[in-house]
Amino acid sequence: MNSFEFKVFGMRRSGNHAVLHWIASHFNEPCWLVNDIKDFRKPAPLEEDYVKADELDCFKAAVGVDGFWEMDKGVLIQTYEDYDLSDLSWHENRRVAGESEREVVVLILRDPFNLFASRMAKGMPYVVPVSGMAMERWKQHAKEAIGETDYLRDPWGGEYIAKNRRFVVVNYNKWLSQPMYRRALELEMGLPGGENDESMDRVVMAGSSFSGMGKDGDAGSMSLTERWVRYRHEPSFMGLFDERVKDLAMRCGFKCPWEDKR
Image (cartoon, rainbow, N blue to C red):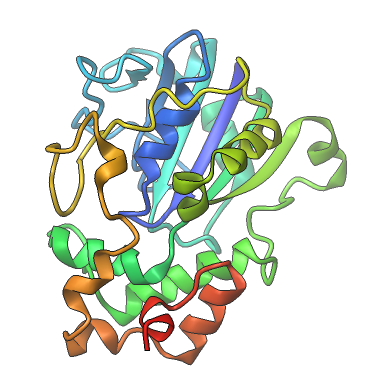
């Protein structure tokens, strides 16, 4: 049995691990992190341990832990990056991961303009960084965030969600810049310990696409909403943002930055 479980979805380079670190910092105990799971039906730790335990003592890695899924865990975090939301089997996941007293399903959404600039800068050899296919996945996540689809909202039925399950959308841009928005998320997720922004200056896990770990301790100085500027004259970048993308972005609360600057 897990006391508290998070299933977290988001596109790579959406600030996922910064948000995860912020969530975990609210708990008095380290959170078990199963990172970048490849198959929702059969969640399993990666062979490589991506948790830098010497830097992030709020996490524990599940890699190499015998009988991990059979253990009673305090806080469990499952993460899914660039995942197809239409390909989820909640019963099969729960059969492996076990029951949880409380479950929060989180969808992290960053504006597409800076997201895809960060993906281009990172290079990301393990996934096509800037492509129509990746943009289709962002649009799928955006439509879930605004309620056009309901893959994440209530797969168990109303009785279950009323008892112990919540679905929370995190607008990364607002999370980054607005303390009051973070306070609202703390309440919505049911995070313990009250207000906690101690992790906001950290650069964590794989680091920034533009400065690596160089801004760790001073994350607030990074121009995370101006990443698009580097690629504004790149046709392969600018061609990604058709009217449908801009419309979805606007409905999610993200303005097209270059149109504001005309």
